[in-house]
Amino acid sequence: MFEISDWMLTLIGLVIICILYISIRQLLRHLLKTEKAKAILLAILNWSTLFVLIIYTVNYFSESQWLFEPFFTSGSFSISVFLVAVAIFIIALATRISSLSKTYILPSIYDKYNLEKGIRFTFNSAFHYVILLIAIIAALSTLGIKLSSLTVFASVLGVGIGFGMQNIASNFISGLIILFERPIKVGDRVIVDDIIGDVDEIKMRATIVKTLDNERIIIPNSFFLEEKVINRSYSDTRLRLVIPVGVSYESDVEHVERLLLNSVEAISQQWPTILKTPKPSVHFVSFGDSSLDFKLFVWINNPIYEFRIKSDLHFMILKQFRQHQIEIPFPQRDLHMRS
Image 1: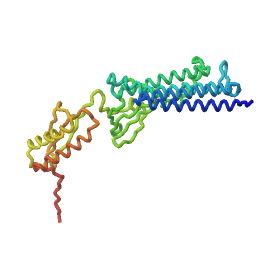
Image 2: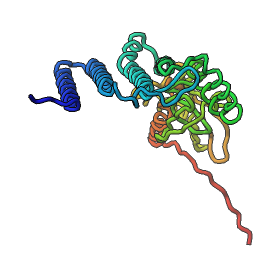
Image 3: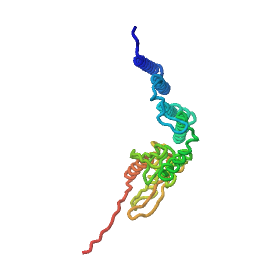
Image 4: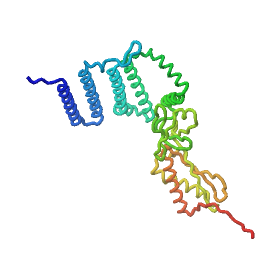
């Protein structure tokens, strides 16, 4: 009578698991219409299959000493390969749950309550840290490590922070303060060392700022609490644009004022972000060396469009001046030659 060895049975079992996995995966892809449901159920299927494979592998090596035999023992607890594998699985599963929740579940809640981008990022970060903390505690408990036994480790960590980890600890705590106090938030337009950019991401140690040239600046979190940072989106997103203009001394200043205001009105149709209150205004600033100097003040409600609106205003002002023969002078100097 033909006998099947243990390794052949194991191989057949693995093949059956793979066939079932592929079949269920293809079935879900055809039955599910929405990407959200498809992604969630496929993730559940993937992790369920991984869990089955782990159980299957553990069952196969159940009589092997290397899997369950402790390789590290300290006091009342011991660590084996099996316990380490379970702890890693718990942390990886928690990370995946956090990622799926932030991508597919939490956004629907945010949309329901119309939460802004910065608040969403804060909740996402807090949710991720809580899930990860629970997973780490569960993993340590799996390894047999009690929280009370970590006091020695905490003491050593405190000494390490005192000698070489001040900056890391400072930036981490600053990141938490930024997330909850929110002096800056994701999406804010900020100016750091005369560089204009948008806050792209707030991480545990540093904040990522995307410049107007699409470059990323990595800034330690403590910088935003210790240094001067201009936040153009803090509490009030309105911004006043200042357009300096110089015209020749022969120009009619009342006419210049009308043309400048007409320029604003002309581009307001394509830029609804330009505010009517406060109204655009023109100030006669000074009598310059070669020109009469004016400043046009325009208010907008979104600083992101600052440079595009300024550019369109420059184009329109130049067009209006040329149509009405308003001269924009350039500096002139008289040289007297002595022989």
